[in-house]
Length: 400
Image 1 (spheres, rainbow, N blue to C red):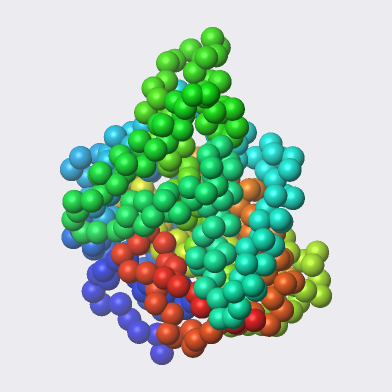
Image 2: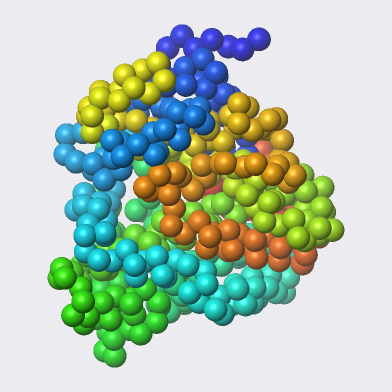
């Protein structure tokens, strides 16, 4: 019997990334637009059905940029300075979008597929040389994902660890601001400014494009070095942590259901559909996608008022049985898969094609090279990171 919701739930939901939160299913069934209380104590609307989640994400009356405004209800305290969010909102007017989109297009780098393949196998070689059990987060998913984003930006790949340590602080979720958040951001911003203004100036990756952009007479508006460095640092942070968290959770699923990995070994051409399905069931997004209402908007049975906070629960949408039959089943034969793992609307992830390429090459390498890959401890013993923007295990010990 389904338990009835009698009070407004608190948010976020369960932190485990291997089990779909029961409360998410109850919310979608009983109150697809539900009043919740965030960790800051602010009220918000949690949207958990696929239809309504897609509506909010595609409606430009719901703003991401304005969630950083002073005095608005918050999902959690700002741990990145509000001017950073403002800078990101200027990416189109500053003429930067073309440079970013070219950087994130997999075909912009004709050697990228081969490089990703070689990097994945190099890391697996190192794991095998050290012997099982191995630690997959530090030994594979983070260096693989971070090195890719170092390449995209045109910075030394050996700097990945210092940048990822900054993300560990920048992407904390907290009910109140904390002392280290602002200096942490400006420390890494200073690093990116140093690379942008190096002598000789960068010629590779996004920083190379930005250096050329500064000299171009065709750019009508002058862009500051701080804005360019902010865009580069934000791209690294969002991209590296998202791709690493996805891979960690995907590996957990493949280890717990080895028949899925075996099928990929038998049918390698299935990898595209398999990654799309792993994206659908992946619970790494964690804390929902925030939007601030810029006007009164009807969402389902609720009139969301201007100035109210709306949280889009991606896992609720991606496990919606009205769109995905038997949503709890990982089905590589699912041909229609309109999941919202990359968002929708204006803020649809511009790196979606790159993310798929990154994941397909990594998953293929793991299932081929490690056919007996499995967790080195019971799944219930995994420690899921608390207070972080992504659901992810702190460590992923495996044997093979």
